[in-house]
Image (cartoon, rainbow over all chains, first blue to last red; front, side):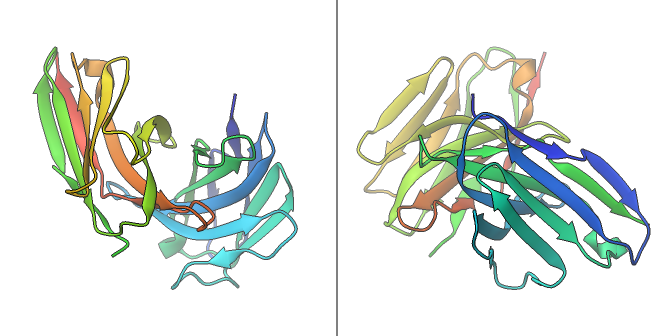
Length: 116
Length: 113
């Protein structure tokens, strides 16, 4: 149980275009979903926290107009990288907390974004 | 005060040996301490977690030792195997913070065959 999926697993896009990444909790309802960014050989950096039906809370330094987060339901959150630039190339990972086990955060497999 | 400091940055262990990774924190409001294992190109996977009301938790070959007074906790991997080669992250979270995780910097473990 507690499976989180992400789609796509990798994406290449041209500079200036927008990319949408989906995060789904497959077998549980997620209390909260989180979006992280990870650079090679570095730790995870929290970008934003989102609850179903409410606006996401962004971490300091994260541009909310560039990284649009929509938490449409208890099982789906999306991250849209708008007007992507090469510096946005990174590994994006989502996670979710279960209503059943509030403490534990379950992570998706990640999405590799490359902006050319 | 929100930091979790992790060491060592990298660790090389022989097969069958014990791998030990340490973490320290300052914020006494942290009340949940998980460890995550991450393979290259994959998302982190929850390995084992502990609450501060216990000093040790063991699951198979993985043990967390927790020292509340020293504000330190560690992961011990017994009988380390080449398949354990991965990056390990300690983390901590606070009740009432939507359970946001504060991650350590990570330890790249290599287990030699």
